[in-house]
Length: 416
Ligand SMILES: [Zn+2]
Image 1: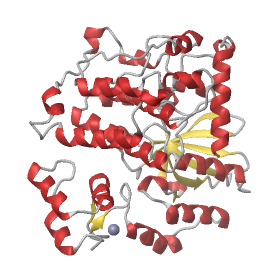
Image 2: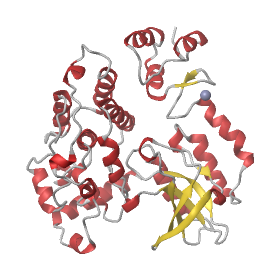
Image 3: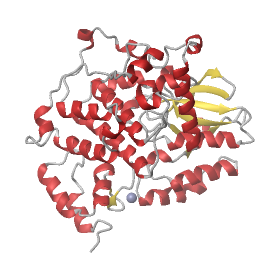
Image 4: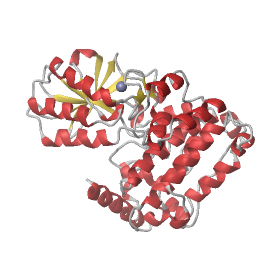
């Protein structure tokens, strides 16, 4: 008989397990009790909902979440039916916690501070007491409030921009959007987003990655591999799979993540996504941005095309080094698939602390980067990351880079 949901009996047996830290015995029991692969994957990645007694369907998300939100529709309004509908739809269609928007009353924000004004509108920084916490911004309640000029007559442009952000919310790298609010003085609608100093998460990532254990590094990588696999299963490519924020000079932030064949003008493929993932492996494991110490210019483009790859500054299990090398192989067909990456990272993550017979357990050596030894100031690592380029410098960029930029833009436009 096909098992489509967990029976109460199975739920009772596994409900107190810590899915992040299963013992060998518990793993065996799970394998015996949950035969359906889909249910098992949902359990491993998203845990159990104690209310529904089923594995969650997404990050902090279960079947009944949608019902909870629907029941709450009557309790809030933006006083604009288009915006209400837009937020409600995001909640109904969400497949995980990150994909839904919320209506957030303006009085939830404190210390609202003007930051900058551009053609699009105005950005403020504010404190949001109820901000949900995630791994890398736990202690940080700052958000950016981004208004669009004259959004009181809500424009399609505003909602489209929100939609675009929302699609990328699961990515550890993209500035997260939480919802919509309205400034009662101007009646302008505003997006509520993460506020990252210098417009970049890099420094937070630096401090986080360097204090993470192998277990958590593998946890992050298996999560990203899982996301990439989902995208590839739907026959899409991720295109701008990288950890820089969206900025005007987008290509500088992404350059280290772009596969050499794409730098030479070929189209983005699933293989080129895997290359980008390879660079992410390097970044998560090493705790440093790729090529942090050299300018991101036409020479770097050339060097990457000639075979330059970032190298680890710390002792890394050979299994991981080998996989990294495969991912960034110059020949796209030699790179592994996202499906394989998801499976192998899950396996390693599961074994690294617990399975003393596994190869990854034997190979691990915890040796965090000692910045004093390397003579690197963590503050400097963002230098060439995406703040290093002034507008003047960007005009010096050669045709190669422009080609790359054009390809990137075209690819992104294609997708939307
Ligand atoms: Zn539930």
